[in-house]
Amino acid sequence: VNHAVSAAEFGWRFGTGKWPDYYPDSQGAVVDIGLGSPTGIVFGTGAKFPAKYQRALYINDWTYGKIYAVHMRPAGGSYVADFEVFAEAKPLPVTDVVVNNDGALYFTIGGRGVQSGLYRVTYAGDESTAAVGAIEDAANEDAAATKARKLRRELEAFHTRTDAGAVDFAWPHLSSSDRSIRYAARVAVEHQDVALWKDKALADGRATATIQLMVALARAGSPELQSAILSRLNQLPWNRLTEEQTLEALRAYGLAFIRLGKPAAADAEAVLAKIDSLYPGQSDNVNRELCQLLIYLEAPKVVSRSMDLLKKATTQQDQLHYAFVLRNAKNGWSSDERKAYFSWLSMAEAKYRGGASFKNFIIRIRKDAVDTLSETDRLALKDVIEGREQVESVEAQTTRQFIHNWQMEDLLPMLDQLDSGRSFERGREAYHVAQCYKCHRFAGDGGATGPDLTGAGNRFSARDLLESVVAPSKVISDQYKGANFTTVDGEVISGRVIEDADGVLRIRTNPFADDLMEIKKSDIESSKPSTVSEMPQGAINVLTKEEVLDLVAYLRSGGNEKDKVFAK
Image (tube, rainbow, N blue to C red; front, top):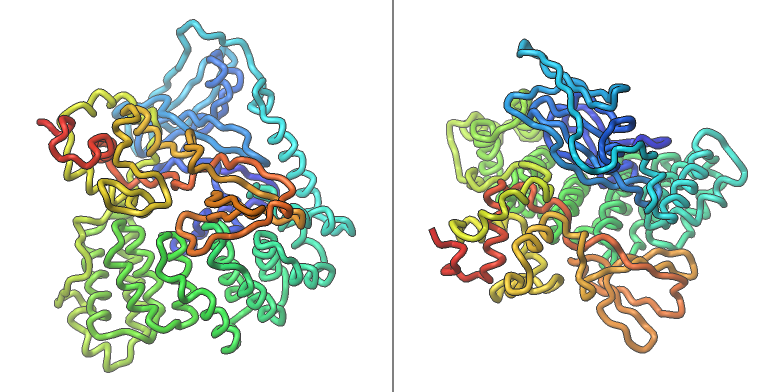
């Protein structure tokens, strides 16, 4: 579900050209339901439903036979949302939905030669069905969100015209912690004459603003600016950036290459000196972006590092990403790595699942990779390329696909299944697949940037633990709550305070950061608590419903295989 604001871009491209939603030049989604086939949509305005359902957005999914109710909330200059299954049946190939003037919701089913039908949904209950206003009119509307939306629209007014005041008005907002505001500010600056702001952009000292401005220069500038853009990005404090900042800065490098051309050898070497040591890291998304850049720049040993990540990746999507990017690597391969690579392609073509075009994509990846080979290598690898010879690449049975964007409503009806009959082995595997171990200690093992989970089952109910893995930002421990700090020079720094001493805050800007950032208290103009957990949303979306329940049971057990929850 996307918020189509002025100049909005959502990364939709044909086939492999699609963008991930974390790119800074993408608006990002309000909420991602997951796989499906969207058909009709309608807001609940005018329905004789309780207030929550009058304000909901109803969206049809033909493939899975569901109507979702999406509940949006103002958040800064845009919205965030959660969702629930409003109606489902087998079969229910929903095609369209409307709210009629009788206050009922009507939907149709059919398509592809199946039985058609018309259904009416009415409300029977005690809650008031009196008409309510739009989301923004709700009594508990956040005044800050109202102010942010007003600011976003003021910035958007510069998207369609040149204006002498645009740059000065937009400049402070390039470092906003609100993605929709800094997006609008960047586009406003891009629409002004580059000569008016390029020098100011290259001199700006704020990390977040610098990243936005280098994106703007790459998009609106000319090739002679490339060296300066790369140099400015190299000056960022890479070991202290948040994951969001890191991803956006890596995209800025990519845009500088895509739009402004192949860099000079000296510039390429300087970029490698800054980012090569970051790969591989703990963040899957950062590794994806680094892989693309490092292969483009022909970094040393990038092939072996990427092949190692391909072998270790637990999702089909991650494996396919590395295979796709590696197809362009001409140098740095060993004979065994080449064989493992082409063996993976043969295995994926035979065993992995995808849409109607999936096998064709694998075939095209293989063709591109073969085109990088010398004639001698093609002959030597002929049998493995054509699938007649196979070497071990990955264990296909351990590979995961996205399953569902789990919500509490999906799982709450199954809470009574958590008391017994769960699988310890499956729970332990789910704990690793969801990558909980990277940040949490459990039964003596794991990371330390998040709370120790060994005793979580003694403190929290099954419902509380389930909610913590499904919606990690709903309740954040005071001990692990982050904050957004705005400095006197306009820089916005997000992170968790690790130490407060001698007038200096030492802040971890992301759970995997190597270094802590230091800020003098006297340099802080304002601060506010972060409402977003360090724990990533959606980590469990590659788990089945049973595996999510086994994960919760595993956490409740404290790692004790003989706990009663595992009794058959």
